[in-house]
Image 1 (tube, chains in turn green, brown):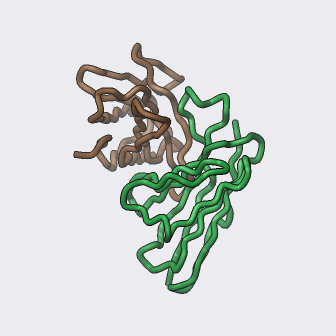
Image 2 (cartoon, rainbow over the protein chains, first blue to last red):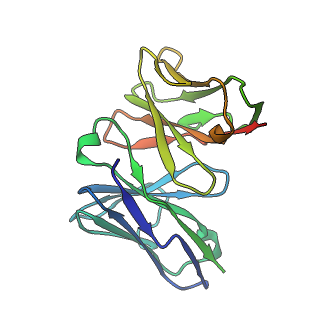
Length: 118
Length: 110
């Protein structure tokens, strides 16, 4: 199956700092990537849809100025949590759909990034 | 009401048992349905798609009831390695967005 790599896996930072998370599709081109957030014992919540070469589409309630998404190439999307606060601590997961899987609905997920803001 | 609802569990079952999970969805126009498996602190992975006629993959059987708007997953002969959270996922009628249920946690014990 298609491989999606996410980095870093773990990050601990002080309140007020910014954290960048990278999501790469390793063996396919992803025109669209999705960013999810998952709090403990809860399901994945879609934050935004990242489209290569254009602005991301954010879900209701997600602050676009706080969660900056850049999808500069067909294989890389980044999520920057700006001025992170303890309530931003969560598991952030990216996913992408390979071209041939558009109709199957299968998403390939990165390994996730666990953010802890002190 | 949540778009996709699942009993969070946990379901504690002995090895070899048969266990079933249900999931209900609110959007009658939903097009596609899936079960994903998520291990603790890991990313979700597709377990199987759910087809209208029902489908089976080894010990796993998925069924869809459009009239009642629910999906089920049956696991036969449970293994210890089946312990995980099972996410019901629904694809809507617009765009490619997938909506995840809250997940049902399964714990299979020796």
